[in-house]
Image 1 (spheres, rainbow, N blue to C red):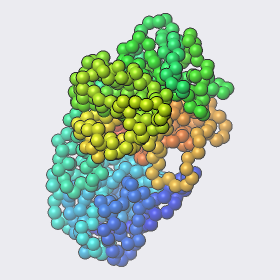
Image 2 (tube, one colour; image 1 turned 90 degrees about the horizontal axis):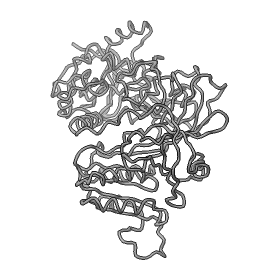
Image 3 (cartoon, rainbow, N blue to C red; image 1 turned 45 degrees about the horizontal axis):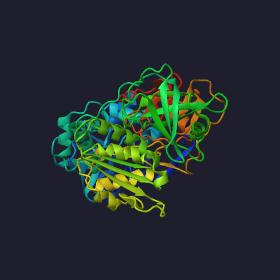
Image 4 (cartoon, one colour; image 1 turned 90 degrees about the vertical axis):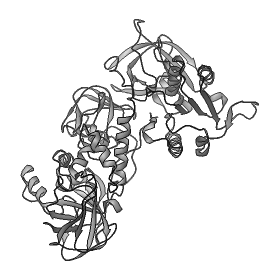
Amino acid sequence: MATLLSVNVGLPKDVRWRGRAVHTGAWKYPVDGPQMVRRLNIDGDGQGDLQGHGGEQRAVLVYQRQSYAYWSKVLERDNLEFGQFGENFTVDGLADDDVCIGDRYRIGEAEFEVTQPRVTCYRVGMRLHEPRMASLLVAHHRPGFYLRVITEGRVKAGDRITRTRTGKGSLTVADTDALLYLPGPDPAKLRTALSIEALSPGWQQSFQDMCRRLDQPPRPSPAAPGWKGFRQLRVTQVVPETPTVSSFYLQAMDSQPLPPAMAGQYLSVRVPGEGETSLVRSYSLSSAPGAAEYRISVKREDRGTVSTYLHTRLNRGDVIEVAAPRGTFVLADDHTPVALFSAGIGVTPVLAMLHQLAREHSSRAVWWAHTARNHGQHAFAEEARQLLARLPNARAFIYYTTPNLEVAGEPGITHGHMTNEGIRELGVPADAHAYLCGPAGFMSDVTSALQLAGLSESNIHTEIFGAPTAINPGITGPGPARPHQPPGPQGTGPFVTFARSGLSTRWSDQYATLLELAEACDIPTRWSCRTGVCHTCTTPLLTGQVQYTTHPLESPASGEALPCCSIPTTDVLLDL
């Protein structure tokens, strides 16, 4: 008979960690006597990060005495106390490989339902002073699990735990956890998981996305980069497209054909910076796949050091350092409808896709929707018009946000911004693949509108060249500063370049991982587990090699790295 050994509660508080404040409710401590369990919490308890913890589906966290004994041996520690794994209920029994999603249990006056495994989270490592803990919980199949409160009531240490219903599908907590976090998920178990109504909506969504990826035709896998590191290419033409946009045509120094690029991929270019540093930026290829020369089209930004360099210093015959074409923002290789949305200079990768469709004389239904300020700022208007004319099932929608009212008779032009309602009225079917490139706000609005129109998240593909929105769960305090050199003496190791942030610095052994270096430089980062489990931090590794200090549970794809658990072994260029 399983037994409730301890009831543990704790209200959220700010905890100092790596020089920052983390708002967390992970500090739980045993309490005596009966405690009232309510729909969202036990009295006296709370969660700090409601994105990953808490709520009706994650009201109570359970961990087992047997797992405490296990970790005492593995970690060689004899000071573990109930509540230290962040759990509300410490129990005797209810092993993760026995308890199933949907099982119901009576404890004291209350009844509960198992909804999901523990969310992998760095904060359990904070509490235990063991940074690897999030990874270890998954790798050793001992995550613990969450309960939904079916019937509110009082519980106390010593209460017996009685199973009142067996979950549909007989999918254990340990198996469910492995499906999400470990490589090679079993498709049959994924579909079983989706049939379990008790599984929390968040995990349902994750498994639905995984099943869709299994069911869809594979997207083309970009070939290995055409060359390692940077090579010199010669500028053969500089062509103004608008007053602020110019195209740069690039050719091999020996005039031999360049390795083919896929439509939607980008080049990274390197130009001299101050001292021994250099500056790197990435620009989408706007040329047709298979073209004899690469073409990048660059908008000159007011404070853009590299774009200004290209516009003012680069002329025909000059030489520039370029990394090989990269990127996974490429057309799915199927016959479904395709919608290409862009704003401003975001037209470049989708223009390359339009070239590919026209070259193939594709019969696919194509939607072309582009937003520009006005006619004078509309880059590639005529080129796109000619390409669309070669596609029998294409339709175009152009929006000018600040039109020149002196220019009359602009057929096919909508004056004003692309609206959510207008996007839905375009009639893009639910089975279409949509490709979006433009400012972050534009892509967010278009994504929301397309989802309301019935497109699944997995069919909406985006390309962002600015720094992505940071994901730093639980971190409080002032917003991020502009990227800067790390504090203290300069390192002596390999150069680490953060391409999106335009910063290069030498590696120093004072940092345990590339993620820690990025944080010291105030580079926007995205992470959750910090131990190679969740892959939230996955970052394109444009050049160089890394070594994993904690080997991830699943290796990243070729050309990608996990900064949370890696260090550089050569000069590296990260797409951060």
